[in-house]
Structures are given as structure tokens and as C-alpha cells.
Amino acid sequence: MARVESFELDHTKVKAPYVRLAAVEEGEKGDKVAKYDIRFITPNTGAMSTGGMHTLEHLLAGYFRDELDGVIDVSPMGCRTGFYLIKFGVSSLEDIKRAFENSLKKVLETEEVPAANERQCGNYKDHSLEDARQHAKRVLDEGIGIV
Image (cartoon, rainbow, N blue to C red; front, side):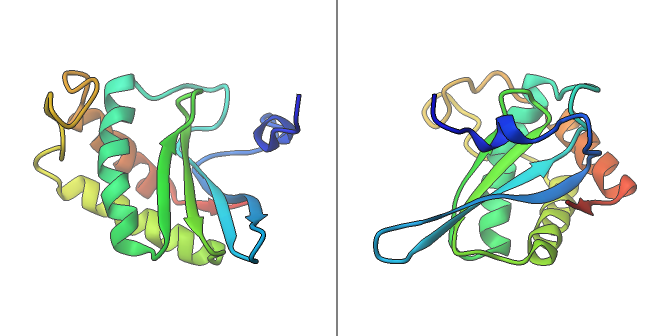
């Protein structure tokens, strides 16, 4: 099996919430793509509900794009403790942290989940804006670290 960066992270040594540069890939023409670990919950101490995580996925997909140029994707981690932010170019961890904080503040102000309907979402009934807000508030209250 090829090397998988997230399997090399010692999950017993990190405390969420945090942001971390997980990897940088360089294309044949020198283009760089960065992957950031956007962690909400300390590994192996809990997990987000699928509804809350699904709602955060919908919200962060737009809010991170509002905050940062070059966002390719915001993808949930299978362990349900955070997301991967993938973008063109490498941004400072301070810029990623600021974008994360600003995005979470927008989550707290959100009244409706975008694209939460049968036509635009593959599991539109599994959303929880309340859970998403609770996670956003907790992360903002605890403060986001940089790893």
C-alpha cells in the first residue's frame, strides 16, 4: 500500500481543535496543492454526529471559499473528528486558522443549510444545523491551535 499521510500522524499526541498542514503535492508544471487537517475533536475522544458533520460540510464548502482563494474541496474525515481542506497553493497556518474561525462564526449565524434538498444532496434528510452550531461554538470557545 502506498504511504498515507494521515496514517503516519500519531493520533495520541494531538489535541483538537487545531489546523495542520498535512501535505503539499507539486504537479508536473510546478503547481502546488496543499491539504490541511481542520480538526474539531481530539482523535479517539468522540465524534460528530453524521447530521452535524454533513451540515458542516455543506456550510464550510462555501464559507472557506469566501475566506480563501484556490479552495478545491472541504471533505469530512471518515473518523468524524474533522475535515480536510484542499486548495491550490500553500497558505500560512495563521491564514488557515483565521479562515476557519471566520467560517465558524458564519456557521453560528446561518439560518438555513444550503443545498439540503433531494436534487442537490445525496442524503438531504441527514442534516443537523443545531449540531453544526454546537461544534462551531465549542471550537471557537476552546480556541484553535496550530500544529
